[in-house]
Image (cartoon, rainbow, N blue to C red):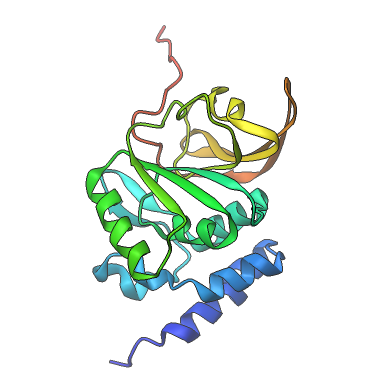
Length: 220
């Protein structure tokens, strides 16, 4: 059986999946070429680290497909001075990518084993500008704080204002809203103390955040 060529697979991921999906931001493309995605997947999925698919993490959660991660990074447009909130640490890969772009990252995870695994992986790669918190951020996190960018890494069946209220003026929120089989990818930008602009990017399907609010369904 031929040996898995990691660098060729990484190059193919960028050329065949990410660029054709309208990800043109040079910083994002360079970041995806530099951060070793294969180190953040589980050992049994290493050969699928660059595949165009969600990878299971356990507890009903997944590591998003590379092109979704790339769109998240491009849409958030993270700057070196930004303070970023990540809701759902998961594998720690997106945490690592955000940390390479931002000044500071606060990542909140509800599953203890995810947090512990991500902490070890981030430390192994010398990433020190990340704070990992344990808790349920499905309805927002520390409402007194404000963030320049918020990345929600699981879907929200029901959109609430909690996350957009946590943005600075000019801050960006990336969130996936809806229920299977069709959900909408949204970027929400805060334009004023009481003003937000929503932009729909495309449709997708992603498991919900643990404990995310759900809409009421009436039976007749």
